[in-house]
Length: 80
Image 1: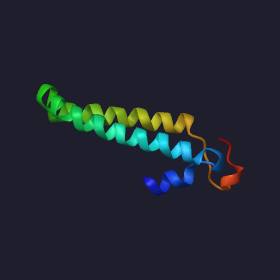
Image 2 (image 1 turned 90 degrees about the horizontal axis):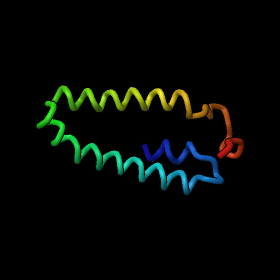
Image 3 (image 1 turned 90 degrees about the vertical axis):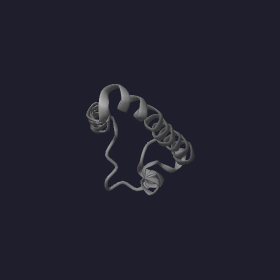
Image 4 (image 1 turned 180 degrees about the vertical axis):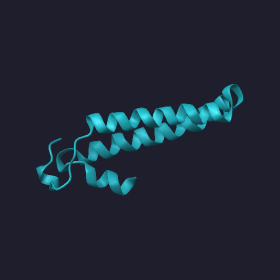
């Protein structure tokens, strides 16, 4: 993850992009760590994993719809 983050932001916003992305990653890890035991007791293992799988499907849709392709572009050519 950290290697990819260093390569996906243009030079103008790289520092801010890395900071926000790192915060989102650590926040997601914290959220999953705190909610999994509660979900395990309340809806069971299959329900907890199904809920996280649904979140993954939603994130795939978001990436396909809103994240721009940067293949073949130099870092300097990307727009922030």
